[in-house]
Image 1: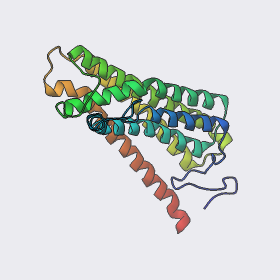
Image 2: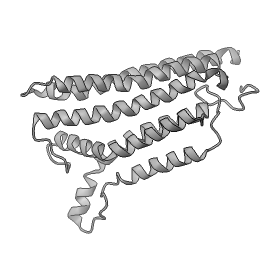
Image 3: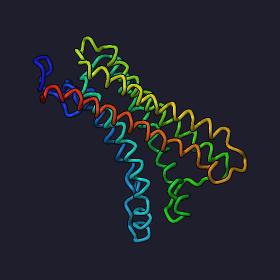
Image 4: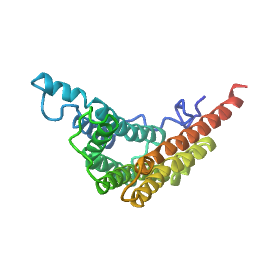
Length: 246
């Protein structure tokens, strides 16, 4: 049940403070939409033959992975906006930095995922970016860690900004606990990215299979940690709602 100062409560237990769409939010949404347009499977060229169509369709996994990456951060920012509704200068600066990084990294990420799926499929899935040496493999890990880590860091700073304004926003006890967990959850992205970068840097010149894949496998551990934090938040939300229902 919503309080008088918070007109509505979302399913995640946060008051819906960001229902009014600002010009800044509209610009960010349009920028994310533009980013997705450059990920289309055929690129800038429309297939005009069956072989070109087949080549484009084989790019679907690369498109899907890149699309998911962009959506993760778009959704993360959208949830943050609905929870806090902040439109101060720091929030706008961080939002613009987020979309700047997405636009910078969109092509490198598409190339990296293309190379990954080409490697996993033993060349069946096409890639315009081919890894030919251990040095190039390190560069791939460096680029992904830099992109993923900086984007996660910006999201952590957005939640940190909301935490610093918790009194003005009149965050409930549950919202304050959840906000702290979100700061931790998004901070894990640059932390694990740094670990991946370190593992890539220390990779031997003639790595075996697991050594070559270890810098990428650490992100699966990241997924487990973030899922656990989400489970803790959901459990906390249920505990918060139980007294109201009784």
